[in-house]
Length: 420
Length: 151
Figure 1: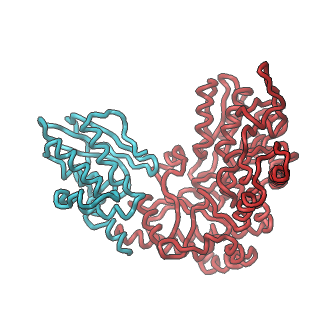
Figure 2: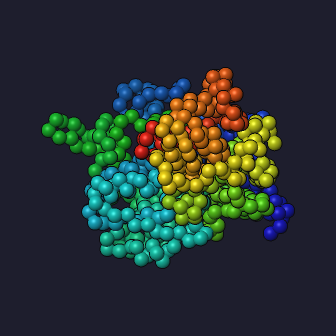
Figure 3: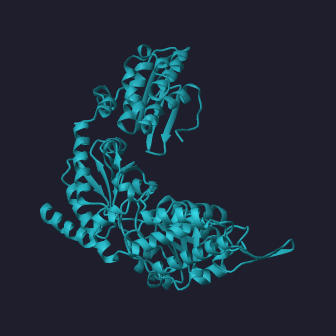
């Protein structure tokens, strides 16, 4: 498709989603960076926050601030109700069967560590294998390496092909009687690749192997239904889906939550404590020791409410148009190579410029008000697979526009000018 | 191009990035040290050979951004043949030059060609790129065998 045709298709999809109205709800998008309009293309690192989320945080601290599930007073009641309601909100958002299957954690990293600790210690034996993939973020590598050191389990790695997609034949060969768990990303933070989750899960379940999904990069772009996916664990971070930092979610099937020992000990996770012994509370409380990020959970609920105002299909269609437009526009920059060309991607574009280090690219883009990320994106094994020490990454959200892609392209030409 | 970008990416720096000097290993090196910046993946190995209290020869290998590579290249040029204590002095002056410290204390005159790195001070996120080779050199001179990391 020609750039002009693509541009008008992108415009139509933007109108269907009302991107202009959507942008107005994010106060930071109206601000300047380095005396130019901010072009925020670092959404895979963290998304910006709509006014509704900022208001929810402010409202909690100005009107309802209290600890939960303990105070015999009005504020305690209001805070507890709002916190519990946020859990139900997340349950519906993910399509989980029960709100007791939703554990609030700090983020995806803590969710995976929780499973590595609690599931790994109880359900994995020395010599068993954990299958992960080359696409994984360090957060879905290191907790398993630590578990392997503790428990004597082994890591097996599903390779990726030239496009950045998993090699499914290799995955099938890795699955076997020794496999104890599969832990795989839904969408790659470095390349954008969306993995064939249904197939991955079905193949694992055929062998009786549970599957954990790192959903951090998928949830902002795709509507996820954990019941349909039939995954055993699903983790995501609030801050990547327009919510606050410091709050995230672990979904786990009820039977695992009942079978797993607690992750941390403390207040809130017990049923009774005696020096002779302690009995634990039922899930989800069993896995939420200590005062949680109450305001964060409530504001995450507000972020989901915000997201639900828009049709999931309209978001996906617009983002896919934008991705296609950006992919085609980047191809016009001399010396530019996109890393990660799988047919199914979330709108993430990782690229290298011939002879120019990504760190230099990032610095120059920043001087033109364009926020990108440069580096290994916490996915060093994946960078190694593609033979690059680092890339520049433009990661888009539903509020980005084709004008912003044009600004990126213009600035990339400036980068080439500096180094030619 | 904006003025601060022109200050950062001076022609001298771009020239050293394109054709780095002393860019090789040193078979008869007395000391070798490797520095790494985990944030951006810059990796520099510095080789030094002494003659008494003098740094007779220095070279480097590695991969990294333009600032890091040019800094390593110009550093090896500047320190060849200097007494070890002068190298230490230069290390501190270079730190002063690229950080927000007092520019006077860096004494631009004594830094010679290295003064082109003054533009880095307008880019706080790039300071570590410029100083990584120097930290690595210092580790080699002081014989700290462990890998140097900026973090």
